View 1 (cartoon, rainbow, N blue to C red):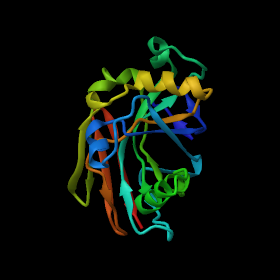
View 2 (tube, rainbow, N blue to C red):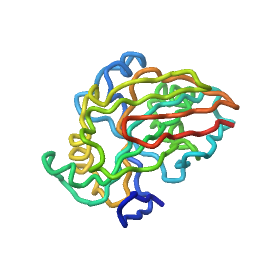
View 3 (cartoon, one colour):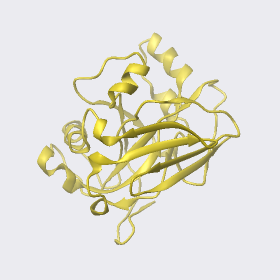
Length: 216
């Protein structure tokens, strides 16, 4: 369940809407073009694991990468939401990780297959505690960072997003009916890299509770 502090809102997680290549430097490190429209993929809710939990490395992959993300939770559903109204549908924010079986993803790309397997393993969507949206002064001015075993791997700012949170909510609602409890993983800054069994991942961000998971 998702709980927003200082409110009475408790939600069951719904769709995990994930955005690819939403930071230009990350697109460059992946040797990919910057998209003209948001690149959306889905993860199952069974991929969620909360802070303090464990990311389980699947036997199907030998190369799992971390991807640090800002996550927005939808608390008011809708369809064809206008961009100027989009933020009224977001009730809170948290830190998240989009874990990716990079070798499995590359095999899928080579075969022109979907990425669902590479992104959707159990525990591949770590999620921190939420804060209410109104506690964040400007969601497009947050610093995000991730350390692995105490070494900073990723550091970025939401100011560098290609598509803002409002743009993403509006776009996603033009395709999917958004429902309370849907989670929007908004893309990762540069610095993604591999993890190994025994690693400790700690994410932090401006005004956001830290997220810590172990890898096994």
